[in-house]
Length: 640
Image 1 (cartoon, one colour):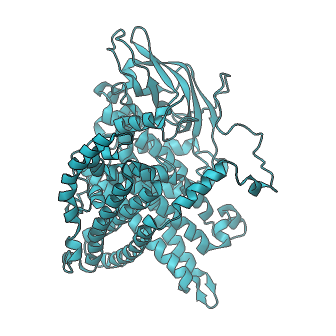
Image 2: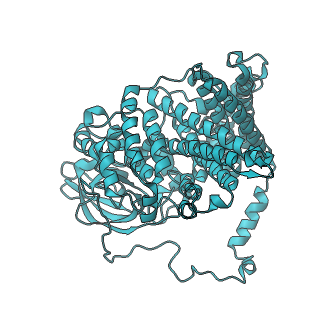
Image 3: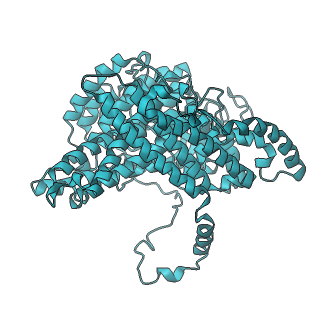
């Protein structure tokens, strides 16, 4: 399918949601920080439900052997049965449809616990509930669809979300799977194939994204404009084949496959929303669905902190525990402070999402972006502290008579989070698009490629009014006043830094807009640094909000939490300054020329002297064949 950049951009823009609700994170990028949007933190919803469920979940997790999952690369059926018994597949489903009705906060706390024991089980539960059938049906389904599918999902009918294809990742305009409306309008016929279908090998229900062609009125269905459309599909429908169970460097127990559709009949009643609304449904689902990743990253951070503390005290070199040596102490400080920040970023984002009063698209995206990067850094630092034992498998350590600590597995399992549900690079572009939205609206044709000189002239006049009002506000603010935020005690200086740096960030964004105008979207490195600065500021704000909300207690937890918060804010501020330095002082131009020459084959001589063992094993991007392959799916039995 030949799709140009303009068409891809149009599809993406049409799928963006528009909100008039306030957004704390958006204010960060516009130099208009409003801490009242996150302080005081919203109260937890239905905490009694989480208090009742989490002990049941912990009891089940106590009986799960993660080494068995890693060794067999499967989640045993009896584990699934136990999770079904306590309602773990219906954590986010409302009570009236048979679910537990947990808040996003308690759902995430559950995933923290699950992910530490088995990231594969965490992936299965989160793919089912965060992006599988329950979430889009709950948000966009008809009442009939809710009553038909949500109770089944809550009872443990595993679901999967199918969007990605061999040649379609973050560019859904290229979607090749098609859905044709039947002549009588009673059903659609699906043809195509989907790649990397998490849970697809064991799923009973699927959400499938397919391209519908525009059509005239047919039967009971009115004329449709077509477009990417979402369908609820029974996985055992004739014509569906799971052709491969994929294997990865981590998450060895994940049930991820390739699913083929050959003339699959789907009732028109199983369409979710209108024709053409599929991508908007997918993106909306991800707004809160992405929070499952920072939740599990926070769990990994907590475990890493424990292992780092215990090991660094037990291991002695040159007469001192290794944690007393400065080089290791810096890593310990990073692990502990970042782990505290991971929990804060998740909790603040989840509480905001539960409250439902704010636009949290950027917050959720930032949480996913920042958490996935921070967790990988933590895991890598922990592996370095553990040395050879960090690189050694837990099974090998146990065979030698030592404590089985699966650090290398954690690093492998966490790595996918920088790709899952939007890679870091795509998240940079997605967040940047939302962050500079006000500039794009103000600039109008100035920021549109192909605009005429006359259009640009008119747009310049219109934009001048916006910037005449906005730019003066960036000169001074609460962050420049030494007594601002005094009620936050020692943390006040860091709130002043956030406010001051937010205005600085907005000025730099404006400078980029003024320099590149319509070409700004191509400056992906510049935008990446802009987004990362905002991500660090958001993490700092979340840490301060969480710390401020902690009650005073005899254990002194709030005081020690404040120590972690102060350390994290210092570390984050240093990272912000490094990003600012690289906004304009970088090797982007040289890198671009070098990459172009590399692609043109100028440096092929550099590759001489080695043998590429992958040559001849297949195409870079496989072409779908019409040949029928063996169906490899294996749905979990009801009672294992």
